[in-house]
Length: 409
Image 1 (spheres, rainbow, N blue to C red):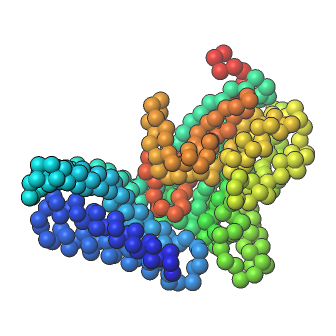
Image 2 (image 1 turned 60 degrees about the vertical axis):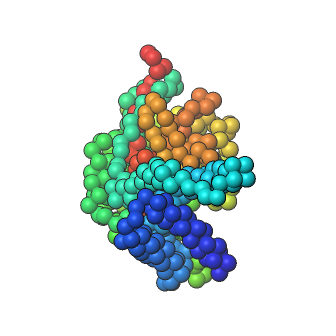
Image 3 (image 1 turned 90 degrees about the horizontal axis):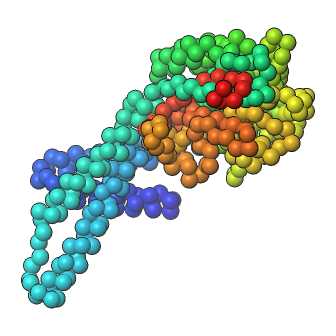
């Protein structure tokens, strides 16, 4: 109850500041009514979605949209605060100076106040419009990102071998089947040799995937489809009736992955063979720093392979790479991860800028990183979670081509 009261007070303060800017710019009363009507609908729907129903902590699409609209409205008002608050301070200082030193009885600077409000509203419109676009279009703005990685010890038969990686499907969030069908076709068009999925098939429950089995069952790759589990796949964020129900949910998800055609690696390995040569594919269960599940067992997963094998590791959380993988006695040439989603918000202009709030939480949050002659690719995610959209950090299909020899050869 206290949390809701504090939330209501914060929302009220932000809304009042937003209204002050609008009132300064226009005298049209219908605009005032519209502004407050939007505020009431947004906060009312948010409170209703998160206090009613029996889903518990399950983040349904309706809850996601309620959160998305709340985030959009609050972002609009938050941008206004530094301008208006700063203007209030300046006006107060100047007004006090004029009254005490110059001893004027009245102090008005309406033209400057209006100008500041106009500038603030113009800037606030940027995140407001961007977040709405992210919910309407951005979440299905699928991008194919191509990388070429060179290795001196890559088996000759795998020169030119192509890997498609997808991650973080989060099927419980989808609301447009035609867009997902398009993305599946886009994945298949890459015609890669192998397809690797690096975890988080669902938000919470295996049942979320039932509607999408046929769609994702169309995925194909010549040398097979392999997967690992992500932190959301274990059902840890749901209040289950019993431990047995939670266990059964995980077993159901494993069965669904098998029905779709994925070979799920649970701290296991497989060999991919070509022309009498092979590379080792290793898959661990989720291992993440902080409060995330640490079920991944790298030693167990690699128990059936050789130390001199060329190795590709699938591990959902990129924090595993720095904490455990880089200094493991076995040299993992390439690690594939996801998990971060790039926080579904940021700015990326290739060759110029790559920024997201995700960088404050994860050292390796999107794209290719290289340390100790080992590579990791952190996929930005196929789906979305929480905020039902993406801004600047688009849903990703990664295609990695392996090359033998030095990069400049």
